[in-house]
Image 1 (cartoon, rainbow, N blue to C red):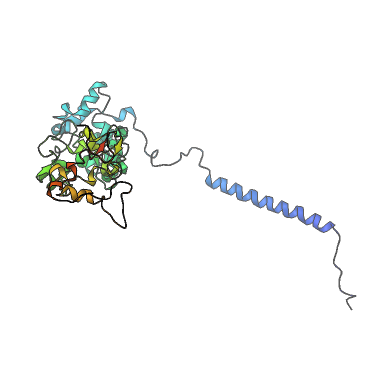
Image 2 (cartoon, rainbow, N blue to C red):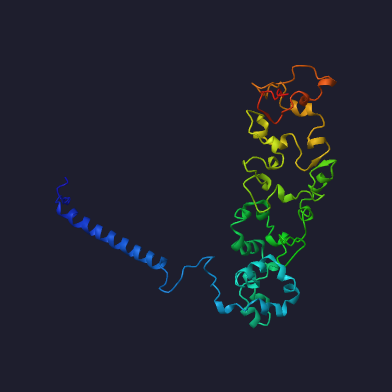
Amino acid sequence: MHKDRPKKRTSGSEPSVKIPRRRASFLLLFAAVTFTTCAVAAPAKDAKPASAKTSQVAPAPGDFVGQEICATCHEEVSKGFSSNQHTKLAEMHGKTGVTCEGCHGAGKAHVDGGGDVTKIFNPAKATAKEVDARCLSCHQGQHANFERTAHGENNVSCVSCHSIHGGEDKEQLLKVAQPKLCFQCHTDTKPQFNMPFHHKVEEGLMKCTDCHDPHGTFEKKNLRASAQMDAVCTKCHTETAGPFVYEHDVVKTEGCTACHFPHGGPNPRLLNRASVNTICLQCHSASPNFTTAPAPTGPAHNQATQYQSCTICHTDIHGSNTHPHFFKTNF
């Protein structure tokens, strides 16, 4: 019935011919794709890779005109610049340090253009990031974390606080002296220093930067750290620093602000509660959700007037070298 149907060739000669041809076709296609990709990706012979940092050509020495030329037009600025911290640095290095063009860039094109403002860098018209990048090109070592601070992230640039040509604070070139400068933004903090008990910031005995570093730290709220890397409070309140044989855990975990206001408050010793007992019982009270065990969970006696303040007996409340319950036994 199937006699006239053509028979299939079963010889092994056909595959042996087709397989090399397929391999040759695949290799030829792969070579073509590879060549095309390399041709597209490869830069031209004289081309330089473009990047944000290398796109600007470094100015030649002849592009700088010197601060004396700048002073011929900007006399009102250069008049008081001799006492500026930047100028002092320039004079220490034979006037090759930080001069006008150290911040504003080479001035030859600006001068040749008859004062063309587009040919010079003007921080007043630049973005916060551009200003910070220019300042941090020198001050990166001191302020390496600035871009990660609340100031840097919220576009509070260097010139928001500093007047480079001279300000009220000559040493730090601040526009206005502390604490007025800080209070211009931190209006919620200013009233705290008017409370009955407060740190003497408004009186001039302390500064905001004694506790905070506006250029950034690894602590919350840009707090500085003591030599022991503890809370900055122990820098002044050394008697609370320890180390103690018996430590009050809250000092190490929640810190000083668990019991004290940092800026000012209505209670003596800047306590955040009017009654000392109220502060202690926030932790030392029986609760189904919280316990200080194995430490005492509450007073072992009544809270009558004569026992009203826990610290009458527990005097070494920040830590003790003699008793785990902070009794002062070394009379």
